[in-house]
Amino acid sequence: MADDLSKQYSIAVGLDGSESSWKAFTEAIEQCKHKSAQLHVVSIQESGEASYSASEVLASEQTARERLVRIQIKARLQAEAAKVTVVPVIASGHSDSALVDYVKKQNIDLLIVGDTGHSSIWGALLGTTAEKIVRSAPCSVLIVR
Image (tube, rainbow, N blue to C red; front, side):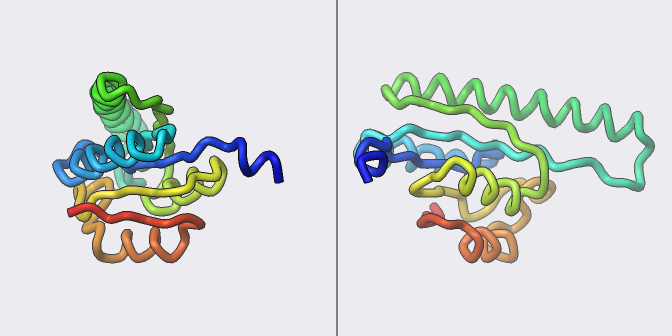
């Protein structure tokens, strides 16, 4: 029981670089300041399509990873300017399941996501992806518009 009392409140935000995900990130910063929480900034790198050659998939994945690294750096700098502790994460997998898996493993208290995202990464978030996240996440989920 003492462990529960000493655990720092933690918030995760899904950040894919879309305008909607940046709005979610901004809300996450505010929530972290209000709750003195640690912020996990989670970007998901989806795997390439099987219909492409191995070299095309590798090049595409490298480009996607570089883009996510740039997004993570920008997020870290903004969070640090707001005096929020950041845990940057680039996970691989399907956007909904990888995000939920991360939240479960890290015992996150609140997950914040945007209402829409890049179609190749998040899809129409208020559709199938959001429904899967809300149904699967072990914590509260805040969807930001």
